[in-house]
Image (tube, rainbow, N blue to C red):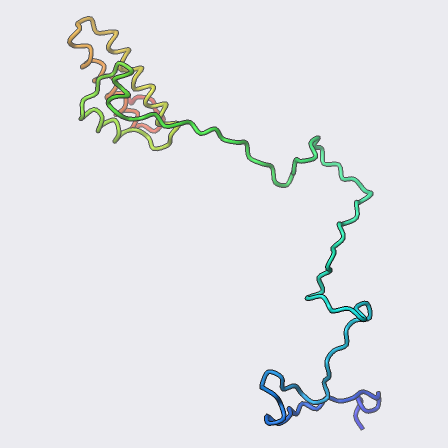
Length: 173
């Protein structure tokens, strides 16, 4: 006599029913196994799938309060929300835009400018503003009228070239 028989436990016989007595391979079950009984709380009702309640209850309010040091209830100290960024629109790099600012670019100037400007929008806009400022400063310093555009072009392009070579933005000495 083995331990299972001494304790009065039924032993399971792993023999499957013959294939001709089963309806299909899916319904073939070992002998001696019946359908599991529904739990006592579901007596007389259809079982819910996967133990999901049909009408879940909201969690009970906790009596203990956690002090976080934040005054707003919507603030989450573990996941602070980033500040909204206001995207600066990119300034157009066209001959018409520069002409409206009093800077008369040649086609080669425009290609040179597009090649040397930084890619980031804020840095690009700052470089365009500085380029125009340097152009106007050099134009104002030139007393002869027909040399004004060339003096502005030379000063602005020299600044842009040295600023592009030096990542700090200061001209090389």
